[in-house]
Image 1 (cartoon, rainbow, N blue to C red):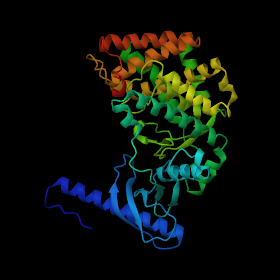
Image 2 (tube, helix red, strand yellow):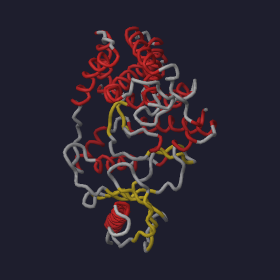
Image 3 (cartoon, rainbow, N blue to C red):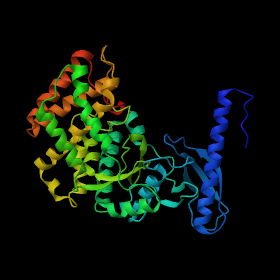
Image 4 (cartoon, rainbow, N blue to C red):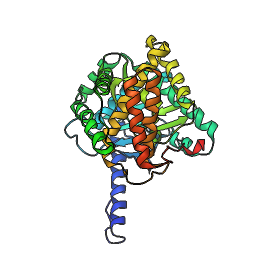
Amino acid sequence: MTVDTSSSGDAGVGAGAEQLAVAAAVAAGESVLSRRFGSAITLVAPEDLAGSGPATVVRARVVSSSFALPRTVVVKHYPDPPGPGADPFAQEAVSYQLFTALAPDERMCPELLAHDGRDRALVLEDLGRTPTLEDKLYARDSRAAERALLSWARSLGRLHASTAGREADFNALLRRLGGPAKEDESGVDEQCARVPSLIQERLGIPVPDAVRAQVTAALEQSRSAGFRAFSPVELSPDNNLVTGEGVRFLDFEYGCVRSALIDAAHLRLPFASWPDALALPAGMSEAMIAAWRAEVVGVWPAFADDEALAAHLTTSELLRVWLITGEELASLDLSRHAAPVSREAAFVTWWRDLAKHAGYVRMTAVSEFAARVAAALAAKLGPHADLAFYPAFR
C-alpha cells in the first residue's frame, strides 16, 4: 500500500496513513490468531473504529477458518514499541486476561480471543454496533439514560467484586509481559502539594491545616490494602457499551489494581475526568451508589453501614476534586461568565457538592472550605455557573 501525496495535500497523507495503520492492524491480528490456533486465519473487510488512544482499533470479518471463531472480531494493535513506565499494550492485555479467566457472567468486558507481545496486538470478541453510555446520555430518552447509568454502576460493582483479591494474579501476568507491576505514585503527591498554592493564587483563599490533613488521609485511604480491586481507570462514558446483558467496559490501556473507592468517587462526580462531563439530576447519584453497593457488599461487608460508606465515598470525592483542581485550575478562564456546559461550571458544581457531602459526614473543615471555594468561583464566573444536565435529562 502506498500513500498518494499528490492529490489533496495533508488530507491525502492523513488518509494514506490511516489506511496503512488499518492494514498493519489486520496483519497483526491475522498473525496473532494464526499462532493461537495453529492454522492460517484471514481477516477481511476491515472497519476503522477510530480508537482515541495509542492503539489502532479495527473490526474485521473472519474467513478461511475452521475454528469456532465468531464471524467478526475486533483487533487492537499497538504499533509503537513500549517506552519508559507503564506499557499500554501490557496493561490492556493483562486486564483482558484477568477477566477472560472468570466465568462469563463475571466478565464485564469483551472476551480476549488471542494476544501476542511480538505483534503487540489483541483480538477481542466483537460486541457489535452497540450504543455507548455516551450515546444514551446525549439522546433524548431520560428513562433509557437512567437505566444505562444504573447498569453502569452495577457493572462497575460487579467488576470490583469479581476482581477483589486478584492483585497478585494481575501483577504476575503483568510481569510476564514485561510491564512494571508497581506504578510510581510520586506524581500524585506532588500534584496534591501544588493545590494549596494554586487556590491561593487564583482564588485568594488559604487552605487550612485541617483540610490539608484530610487530603493526606484521603491519599492514605487510596493506597491502603483494603477494598482493592481491578480498575479500568478510564471511566469515560464513551468507553462503555450498553448491551442487553448490561454495560460492558472497554479500553484498559491504564488498567490496574487499586482502591475501588477511587472509581466509586465517580458515582458522586460522574465521569469527572472526561472533558465533556456534565451533571445528573437529583437522586441519580444516590441510586447509582445503591446499585454499586449491592454488588460489592458481599465482598466488603463494611459498606453495609450507611455512615461508613458515606465517609469513605466523601473522602474519595475530596481526593478526586483535589486532584482535578491541581490538574486544571490553572487553565480555567475565570475572567468571564461561564456557560453551563463549561469546565468552569463543572468546578463550581463539584466544589459545591463536596461542601454538601462533607457536611453530611461531619467533615466540617472540608465542608466550610469547599463552600468558600465554590462561592469564590461562582463570584468570578457569574450567576449561571451551574453545570448543565446531560441532554437526556434536560
